[in-house]
Amino acid sequence: MARAVPATEVGRICGVAARAQRDLLRQTRRYPELFDRPGFDTSLLATVTLANAFSAPWHDAEELRPLNRTTLWAFALDWQVDVATTDRAELVELNHRCLAVADGGTPADGDELGEFLASVRDDLSNQASFAQLRTVWREELRRTLAAMIQEWEWKMAPRHDPPGWPVTVTQYLGNADNLGSSFVHMAHWIATGGPEATGHIDAVLSASRAAQEVIRVLNDIATFDRDVTWGDLNLLRLDGGPEAAGPALDHLLARHRGRVRALRPVHGRFAMFLDRQVEFCRGFYPVADYWGEP
Image (cartoon, rainbow, N blue to C red; front, top):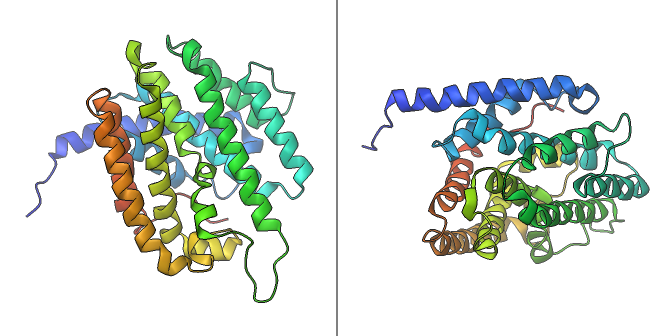
């Protein structure tokens, strides 16, 4: 029989998540044009904060705030790209707006996506490591935006007979930055890494991106039906995808675990956080989805 986690510990972690969920609820009310959409229901907010609280149970709600807010912002960005944007020129302009904010710019009036990102940026700027890691944070954002644009272009490209997207499984898996997880992880690292956050940054990024690749495949396997309904790309919808998903996941899990092992001696707590993020997703995705009904 598996060892049960003490109920008091579960209760404490859920309490941290509850405090964090109320903070995210305040953000959705602060940016109503961004979040007044059916997909952003209270279950999404609850699941985000539970995932992060159980992934880093040694932190309180205040310490997890940058992680939670960045996660919510990444969901908003995903919605803007996948659902709200129908023209490539709009997508390019959105990319420029976000990077300008990351570079310290002031968002235009009414640009709630930019305003929320500026709030996240300003929160992170209070951390001692931000001055040195700002370019790393900005690069993870750039990679996320570029990968989202790439997926949008694949999705919008003309399809021939038989229907199919002009992308291979290898290309798709190589575009995992479109998930935005590594950008989110970097916000958490800046917020909680302490004075040693700038050390071994290549190993931190390597482990973060490996975790992201696993989560990308776990998400696709679990949300296949939703992606078919929403018209989204999905690994299982590509040529050879269903048969390739299992071996790809096994390979990526092995690589993720290897990079976590390599990171553990220098940044053990962050390595544990990344591993718990992956393991949370392995338990969560077969049961539920983050998004509410569209």
